[in-house]
Structures are given as C-alpha cells and as structure tokens.
Length: 211
Image 1 (cartoon, rainbow, N blue to C red):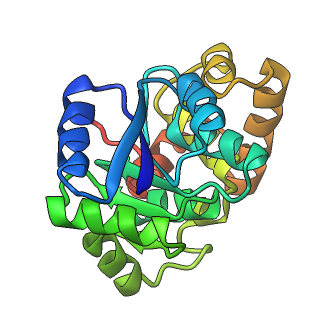
Image 2: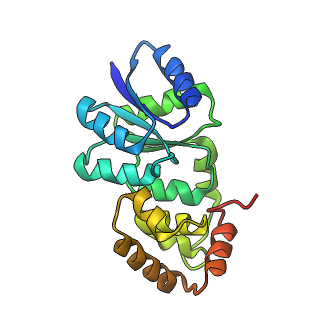
C-alpha cells in the first residue's frame, strides 16, 4: 500500500484529491495538511511514500517547505501540485528536489499515474509541462531567472509580487538580514536596479501575472 500525504490550503482541493486516490486499492491518504509547518511535522510523523503538495500556500511557499523536508529527509518523494504551467516553476521545483510536477488541470488518470510513478522511484512531469520543456530552448542568457537557485527564485518572486523584507522573512522562515542579502545578490545577478525593473523581468518570464 502506497502511503500519501496531501498538502493544500484549499479544503475542496484536498477532499477531491483524497477521494480520487482512495478509490485506488493501492493508495492510501494517511494525513492532510493546509500549511507548510504542518506538512513538515506530518512528514516526520508518518514517513509517507509520497507527499503531494501545493506550490503556494497561505503560510509559506511549497518550494520553501520542499527544501525544508529534503534537508532533513533527503530521500523524500515529493510531487508539486500546482496551477502554474510555466516551465520556470517546474525547473525550480525539480532543482529543489521535487520528484514530480503535476498540474491541477491534469486528468484524474494523470494524477494517479504521477503518484504511482514517483512512489516507485521514478520522476513525473505533467504532459503539458514536459512538452513545454522539450520545446523550450531558452538559455540562461536569454532568461536570467533560469540561473537562480530555488531560494533566490522564491525571494525574487515574492519581491516581484510586492512583498517587503519582513513578509518574505516570515514566509520563508529566514532572517530579515538574510533576505536583504539575497535582495542585493539578485540585483547584481539579474542586473536590475529598481523595483519596476524587477517586476518587468518577472512579468516578461511569466513568474508573476498582472491582472
């Protein structure tokens, strides 16, 4: 029996995915969480075969929680479950240690396949994302955000969304001085000097969406 933990801050999403997985005779949802902190605690408690986790939650980012879990449990099999099909997010998730990247728009069959594949030790990318990666030929020079580490990427995204240093520190559970240091590094690495340049770069490469 494959043990799964679900992490999503939307109850409707969790209940729907839980029902879907538990219709399968070989899959069992052993716990659910709606925050990154609870995800970490429950992973430690249950040691599941697969953790299916939302990319963005109210208290923190899925990437931050992914990094926290992988730092303690290096063999953790984690699938990022997200509505973001952009290649840059998939690349950052895989770079941070995710074994799978599945879109919330995926079919039920694809979600089940992803869980089984990752549980067996393989990796899985939603077909839409895998195709986009195969077709994309952007180099780090053409898209400088591709050169960012997962932590740099998260801070860059949060800054582009308008978060201040205090908010970013709370969200990622790191010190304010650390955030400020990363902010300085990002300016040099991406050759940006003003907040508007940062936002323009994030919009250009589909890291944030302007409504």
